[in-house]
Length: 200
Image (tube, rainbow, N blue to C red):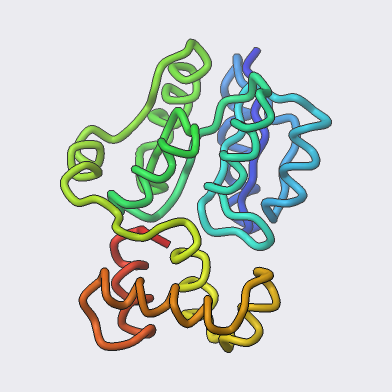
């Protein structure tokens, strides 16, 4: 039996996924959460075989969740299920330790097959997306990405500095670096492009 934990912030999607997977005789959904932090706590407790997670969730993103699972050396594997067909996201997902990356508009049977493949030690990634993922590299550092994401969400530089334990000047430097690397005029444009490419 493949034990799966679901992390998905949209409750209707979460319920539909649980219902869909329960139809498979060899897959058991052992729990679900609507945010990444709760998912992390429950995964540590329940020790599922696979964490099936969305990317964008409150408190902890699916990519951050994948990193925590990888860094904890738990045998739990991670499969990302998302609406984002963005090469940058796929690349970061694989770098975070995910074994699968599937799109939500994939056929239902493809999901169950992907979970079985990952459980056997394989990878389940959309082939076209995989080719695109290495066609353009992400120029942002982790810290630039972090600062740009918060700035793009409307947080003032002083608040970003306080949240991340940096000085106001350092935050401005990170934003300036990100803007320069993306070849745009301001932080709003930089945020838009980085989001579009899947780098945030």
